[in-house]
Amino acid sequence: MNIPITQSKDWQNFQDALGETSFLQQEKDFHYLAILKKTPVGNYLYLPYGPVATGKAGFTKAIESLQALAKSHQAIFIRIEPQSAEMVKYLPKSARKSTDLNPAHSLIIDISRSREEILGDVPRRTRGYFNTFAKKGLKVEISHNPADIRHLVELQKTLAKDKGIGVFSEDYLAKQLAQPFASLYLVKYNPTFADEHPDPAAEKVIAAVLIFDDATTRYYIQAAQDKSYTKLAAPSIVVCQMLIDAHDKGLKSFDFWGIAPEDASDSHPWKGFTKFKQSFGGEPVTYAGTYDIVVNTYKYHLYQAFRWINRHLRKLS
Image (cartoon, rainbow, N blue to C red; front, side):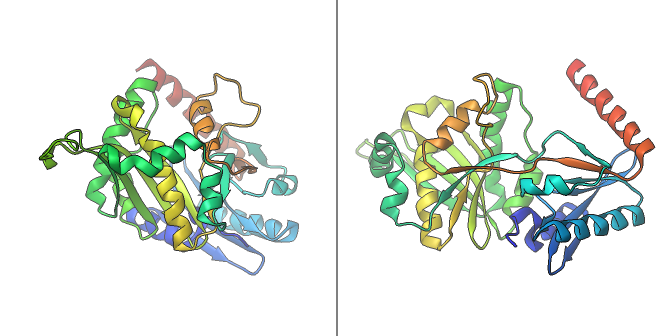
């Protein structure tokens, strides 16, 4: 079974750091990490990109195990996101399609190939930026210091303000960076690099990317850039560096963690960065999406009503 990072023991350790209650179940034909989420209406179980199963029998066993777990913890429903789209056929009748939390579509690059093959899929202009970035006063650094997450957060806040989108808190992202699977790539630029005596104090972070690594895959999780420096192509440069570093580490795949569906209109909010990600090559994948398996019908309707009211109140505020 291919266990995604959000269903791993490492992810459970991250949940522990957040103060969450979680349940890891590992069997021969199924595997899951279920996180107990609390709401004013009641509890529910959430399985980011889970459960994982070898086939119909394993998936059925996983659901039965989860239903028993849900009842023992008075959970209203079980929110699942099986990556295998085939498993949708085996959902119980109580399952309801929900809004996708983790992306239902992604793009994966095979990085088990040679460096030349990996960069061969990249546009010539992008390769040019990557091959000459040091000559333009740019450098790429890797940090595991949770305090450095502020660079990503500051860049994301500007982006969120411009596009009216939400972002994770600095504390949440700092706890992620503190985990052994996480790294933060920083692109730094010194505008005085061409001076006879460059000023180190003039150096600033113009792009940041949070990535996760498991035994086989590198995941492109969170990213942001300073729009004042778009001509320097920092996002393209750092992706090239991350691809090569992951290849050198012996990883097999690079997962871009979310793209727009193939038939998405030009107005889709992910259309722009999907085009950026596709410029590096790779193969699109489609997952099952997010589903709720209802355990308590009455409280589930209350939960849905509570969510609807909350969404509308946020729009009014």
